[in-house]
Image (cartoon, rainbow, N blue to C red; front, top):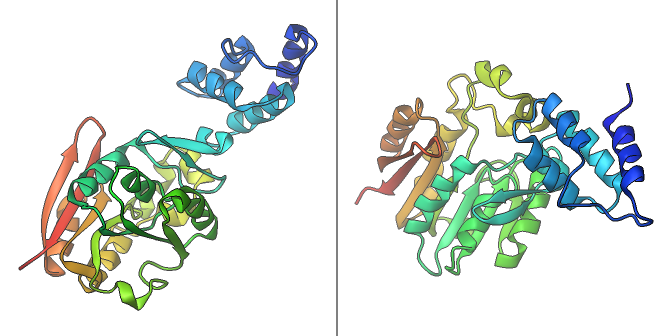
Length: 281
């Protein structure tokens, strides 16, 4: 069987009018069919996005083949749509989810102009970039253990003057940030180890395990973040962590043990849960 690339190249050759331009308004039916056969639920929309991103038929063919092979659409395109922004995403980097927009919304409501914002487990830096784009000038710091993610985050945070550091949670941060962080956000891994195999192939095969696996109960990394947070938070600072609906109660208990007063925000539309903790006066 010919690959999607060869089938598309042949179809493109039949449609070309002497140039290498692609008809972005009407993606080849063969592309839509191949994407649908590969299990892409929104095949027509994906075909439009891929067609719009490619500069030549050959490039489009290669992109379609990568997508059919299982690579997440966002990693094929090189960007993900998040909070109305285009976030640069490289292969192997965690793709920001729509549900994380709840974390951004809750954090934005607590962020004042000039606030010090810290994004742990930042991945591509999507959360920090969205907070910076909310119109409030902030001092933005981000940390991730994955060097590829940090490279992406530096690209995405450059316009806001944000700083992305490579390391394990608080370890690479300057000591001068202690006691100064107004808003600390984290989309730490919260999938239990035993459930990783149940995740969609796109996630388990093409995103870093460290961005997904939260340990036996999904809360290993969260507990570490929460336990150390009070030392970094300003007196009126807040910690916000995305979690699962099933793990929210345990996450909130960790907040209490750390001396933080928790509340839980939930969006059924986004299927998202965020635990927010404030310093206890």
